[in-house]
Length: 395
Image: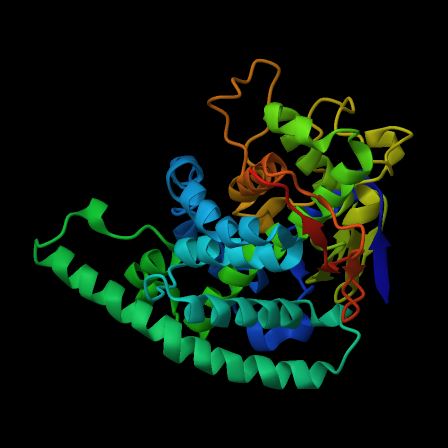
């Protein structure tokens, strides 16, 4: 039996329950077994505590102001020359480097082949993680993912481990200072590897998980947000000069289109929520999409795109899309930024990578391609864009 929860208060209550174990990714275990999001209890607490060292505000600020603008400029340049850009393909290309950086996946400098290989792997790993919603042969995807994991480990993970092991040796021998070490997930895990019980296969899957999660969720947000902006704004280019409103557009799109439409849990014991009782072993399906459209929380137009809506005290503009409780998303601020306030200084604000990408694209005249309409991804039941052709004007 499955208990379905679709109201905002009930969903929030369920997400906070420690006796409800993650079960959303059971079908994709070849990629997701023993990765952070699938852990529970003390093992989850310890690994999350270690990995959260990377996801701090100064890290996000550094990436947003120092690293990401260069990456975005380099990735965008070839598309400006052609005047054409598919948002999904571009999203993978620009985000693969960002996610690889904070994950700790080394790539040969300026290697187009490495980027293309990682893009293909992240697409495959993403399809595998959400296998429960696949509309194609699931066993074939599992076999393909296992082969790709072997290549990922050999070509990317092992060399990255060897590089960081050498750096840690130099640190121990006084040839490096602490600040010289890369700040990424792999480095912090290697320093705590024996305490966390991380054999090679688990470490490889953890690297794959962080890389796919960072890319997949941001690309999902990017395409949906651009689509909503095209439908809502009479002059999308005007948002370039109002980045705070542009960020609100992104947050509102995240509310309407969470990267996962549901959260799934399985009860470890009888659990009593405010509105429903759950027996031990029952599956709980939390509809984030429906909870985020609860009219009692977001108003009578809750199902509509309105980045200027008034929100009650304590209500997030992105709803429950980033989760709550033990499985709240670590990379929230990296993708979505910090929440703007009435007195926020636009020049000092942290907007998140998705808003920065959209702002740069709009500055170059991004608009729909009238001859090539966008299309949803037919390989999954999730609401994902498979292709989103656009055009760019001259700078």
